[in-house]
Image (tube, rainbow, N blue to C red):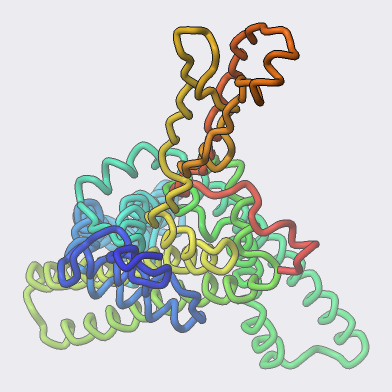
Length: 443
């Protein structure tokens, strides 16, 4: 290795010729620091640090779609659903139907409960957000317009994949709830026949303890088959049918509990924090006895800003977890850091073929040589081995008849070997099966 060639362990900016101290070099240094295996707590901290360092870009990506929709949803909840719930009667079937479907689509923004429209918006926003995070991870500054341009063509496929994942979640949760109620009813019946009616407090405790069970089991299928849906479709261009298989390949069996814990408790933490802040602020605003219009504007603004700040963190965390799993399972950090390394000289451009042997006018090969040796193919000079056509001595010439040898036909030069160096790995592609089946490596 010469003094001018960068070391294998030199920073990536030095390998590809970016001056130190520039913004590009700083971005590449951040990428090298990000592409390291992290514990789960480290992934949480890393996602927060990314959000903090690139807040303007990431917040702008989310604000374009999210803030207007949240304002609209909060207006619908306060101006339509809340008065409807106060005036609907028990026999008003049409009113109850409108209220149920309204809450299903609008949700409860005043209580930080997302509806169908909020979830759909999060799915759409997650596509350009993931593109921006991918650029950050490989040391490229994200651009707002470029992120939307690259992500929008894959949004329909992304929505379909998440609908499939949510359907699997609700199906497994429903089955778990039915099984739990059947088991609970069986035990209650057996206890009643053997010891009499069970105390109400015991029934209440067992019921409340079992309520999270459907959610916990439902999140297991999300963690194993759909947790990385957005990165897989947006970055790897995976099809909807390939998402569960590829997701299971990344998660594996050894690190399934890690992914399940993150997917299960992250929504609880984010939604719980939103509910606590909104409940406290609502009580404070109610105690001030502000005019209705001003109170509505303050509640709407606070709710929209709070959801705007906290909701994108979940997508940032899942993308950070996706890259952490790729680093652990596929050596993604090594592939990125080696993508722009200079090749050795022998793997460069093809060497020109060796020159053809020259002949004189008399037809005898004066300086003809054998086909080029391997050392000549690789650019090293070698001595030619001439054909000797002269007589050994004068006495030998007198004793032997004189005749002329035809010029030897030179063999065609050997073609220089072509080294088929595979191209640098594309960041949006992944090998079909790098890590092998889980049954073999136990991962």
